[in-house]
Length: 155
Figure 1 (tube, helix red, strand yellow):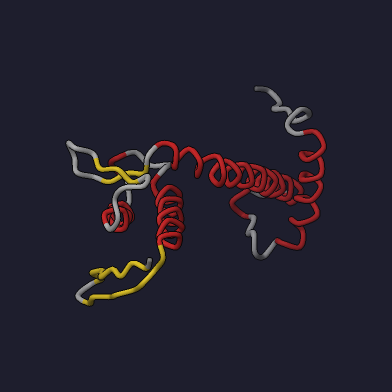
Figure 2: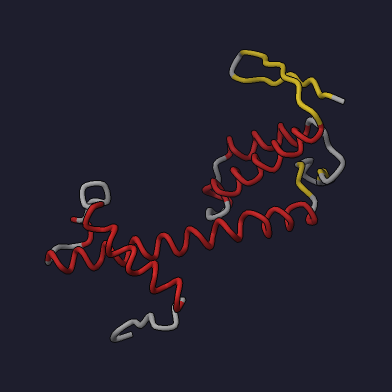
């Protein structure tokens, strides 16, 4: 079965056809995208357009893991589905971002110290050739030992 939905975008109407499986994947992608945009912000700093876009998408086919809050009328994915997405994608994403950011920031700090400048003087694009070997050294260390040998002086 294919779904034929008409969406409002600006003043134009768009029609597209997708299968139920494609719709579920689109919902997952939208949920994950909205999560990246809004998860780190409190309610006062949410990207409302992202939230409304996912509401429109969820409202097209409630049921089968998509529920509606009786009080607010807002749609949401059931906890089994969100738990699966969290375990399958978000944990992996956060893990990669953490280690990548840590190696990049440590390398920037070290290069700034080597140059006797502030870290804000290090430009990732301009200094990439010097940063990469430092990052790789940290990456190898962290892959082998995790944070076991990471120390903060004068803490």
